[in-house]
Image (cartoon, rainbow, N blue to C red; front, side):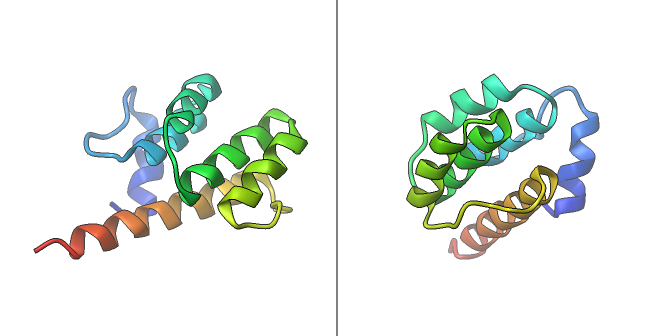
Length: 105
């Protein structure tokens, strides 16, 4: 899936089938359901999950908690707009999914 397709899916009432959990979290956040996005990402581990978790806490305004999660993601605290960070995360996560799918035999 390309970023434009992912953005277009926001006009639907449910996320597209086959999205991984981090992309589902971003989808729900973009649809205004921060709580569900946070519930999803809390169950995940790894740097990608930490990045999404950091973004969600930055969006919430809990900057100290966001800083904690940015450190776990191996990233500096984001200084761009929330929209720009959301788009950068979505693009990176979509690319990671695409790479992992192309590595399958």
